Length: 276
Ligand code: ASP
Image (cartoon, rainbow, N blue to C red; front, top):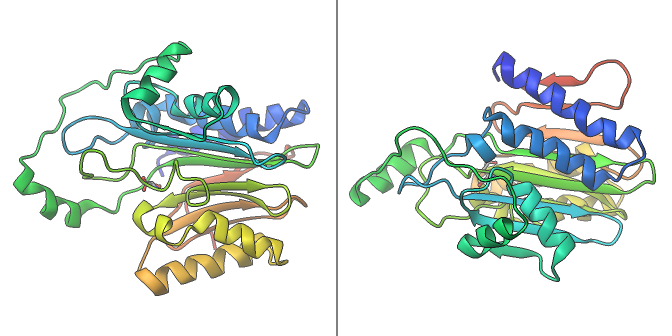
């Protein structure tokens, strides 16, 4: 994590906490935190999103609140600076959970969401180069996510990503899939995932962690046991942000690093590149 990224993460935590401090809902704190990270261009989300192998940025995002289990998500959306806002609008303005592709972008434009045109030359690889490239570089992460607990005792979770390195056009990861990349339920807790989506999807990690919370495991223990299973069963790589309705939380990763932080309003936000 660079210094700029660490500072940006601390600012994002402060902005999100301000919502909670004013009595606002957890899901709103999650959204403003992610929005700030999306616009920074410093992470693999929003402005800084990876491109797929045809040179196009296609982004995924989702948001969920734990009181009524409302959720919204977009997948493979193009040309929008804040996919997390589009996800919130799906949750609030429609009876659906997930919109995809050009139709998701049209939906976002209908609500006049800020547009984004990636700058710089786009990479275009011949199709024959794709598989070699996937194996070589498919392990860089940098998705943004957040979980929060508000004063009313509700939890919220969200995530936003430009996907992984060297993805085939049309690839969608775990981030917009409720129960895989995010989950939030006031009866268990909230989870936001980062890491290689292909593994996270196959073990429905976010919901699996919540299921362990319901059975009384701590956030740390629940995340550790599910991520251990991810590694043992399929050799996956991921990190989890987990918060329980009683305020206990865990930041757990089975990747070498995971830039993450937390803040409860006292002292300064804690930001680290690794978590024990
Ligand atoms: N989970 C994201 C995906 O697979 C990537 C990441 O977390 O960096 O699309």
